[in-house]
Image (cartoon, rainbow, N blue to C red):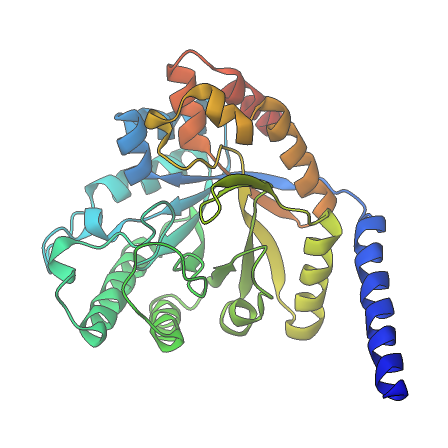
Length: 328
């Protein structure tokens, strides 16, 4: 019993020392390369004129790095009948502006409800859905692999984090998609993303060439209905990335840096005063500085559609601050 107590005490001391080290150690801030996330579907639901939002990013903000989400329901509204018009336009505009794209492919891509599934898919079996998704992924990669704007393919969005309105799927489902990408385009790397706060990132590191992490600071915690500040310091992300590099030889980038409010309802239904509780201009500045302090080399801001929406609501300060960020 005495030996057991000593072992427990040692474990507690080591754990306490490690936690203290996390909060004391500060990685050297770096000049992080900034980009933005963009979702046609979300921008359209929020702003209506999603093309103006996209052109604003390229021409006004002069963004050079975009993580571009694709929506299955927009691309294949009828089985076997693809509508490439809008995605063709987005890729071409990026080419004309000299921007680089991470193209997100698959069933689970950015923005709620996460899985953007056409109506015709909803009565299919899991195996049938898997085959259709591989067909979708192969089609996207085959169509755009010759574009100089496309730099990386991202397969699914946080596929190992069970969040959103999605049918059941397995790790093999994601592996099949990665194989499809690699078969269609052997020249580009595959990015797999995971939750920054609730994952070790090892599943993504085993499957992807690059690992992507989310980074949120203040969120709405639905089960208990309150706003929650994540307590993790920048070194939490730095050391996780360091371990992934040492163990798997994979680079970690920040693919989703919070740059908009996290609210219980949609922005149109949430008063501005409530939105400011989770995200005001100072929080925007703090989050960018926090990202620099993690020493991750890239950070893709999550909120470009909201900045444009706020600008059109008579609150251009977020858009204007982003403009200053991309000048530097």
